Length: 371
Image: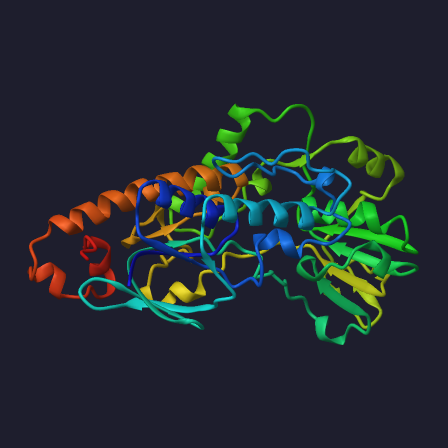
């Protein structure tokens, strides 16, 4: 029995736990990863801390004196571990959350590999790393080479001497190409849309505008886009060199995959040993399916951090709060809303009709979760 269950101990989950602890709210943090570090612990070794875009410190504790030459997976994992220790955030791991359902008397039933938890509210901070997106193309199953996703990217040396097709228009695709091109026999970059490179400073005003675009989709109940997808690709020195050398010369997406590579409708073909899908991730929210939170557009409509269909559920690190700084702010906002929710539940007369009836379907979104 807990007032709040936090699912996930990455940037969003730790930020939420920090603010819940400061508010004196009883909670538990469940994390499926074997150790601290969130999704960062799974990043490829060649992604050093100096190459990281947009890492922002957790609330209350700065990340200082990090060696930019060290793998970001090590730097951030150590920082998260120190953060958990400093603020006594007792994360339970590894714990897999399989389903969140209606419980008794308006509570939530959280089913996990570590038993079942009963909560008055839930903060979902599961991120996206566990749901890599694999597009499907005709002939994909016939390819004789190797296919892998960014989630399984081992670093550039695994592609030495190979002919590599990199699919995707985001930051990860660019980072992969710049590394792999140094050791591969040939690289080919394929994207659905022409890449947009952003030159110049990216300040607070630009950041707010980008977040607003993502927020507008979430408010309409559409699956969120990442904040990075609407900001464009930073035109730094390495990217400029990649453009000048031709490594970042982009081709439109192919029509089909052949046993030997990829092919376009106009007859063009590129032979390949490896297809690397740098095609992004989707929100890991399948465990929330029993609550029927999705809108007809396929996403969960969120107001602030609250799910519009159930105010007991807060999604942090989802949509507009998917960036590091956005997750910090959203963690504080979720804690404030949950404190009000719990206070309202405490004022509800014992044995009231509301507290005795579990909500069903759309009625759930109108229920104030009473303890």
